[in-house]
Amino acid sequence: MNLSVLEQQRLRNRLAAWCRERNALANLSPHWCVDEQGGAFLVSVCGSGERVLRIVFDEGRWSLFMPASAGWLPYPARASVATVDELIDELEQAPLHIHW
Image (cartoon, rainbow, N blue to C red; front, side, top):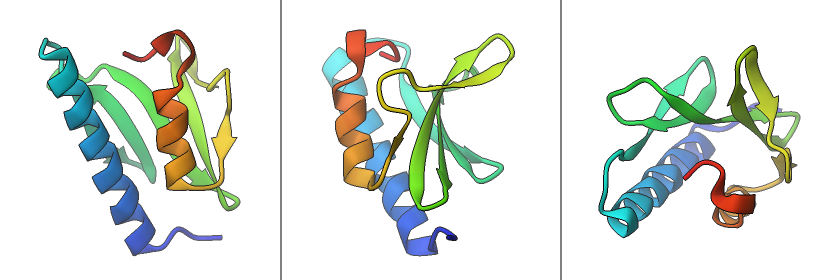
């Protein structure tokens, strides 16, 4: 199943808003931003190139990955979700807030 342009835009907007909220709450550096690369959405430390989270749409589900020395590992708590809302909820519930 391919991801529609509308759904891509929806996720891009939701992730950007989520990063802005995190940045405002922390009111500290580094700040988080969202990029797209090779069909994946990447949450990273703005300006540094340090990737924190990779999100890919595959087979009708959003898969979450965290960085590892040899690439990307599936997100430990919940590696995939069905909707953008579930994805944002999962990020809010991140165990130990490993990304933030």
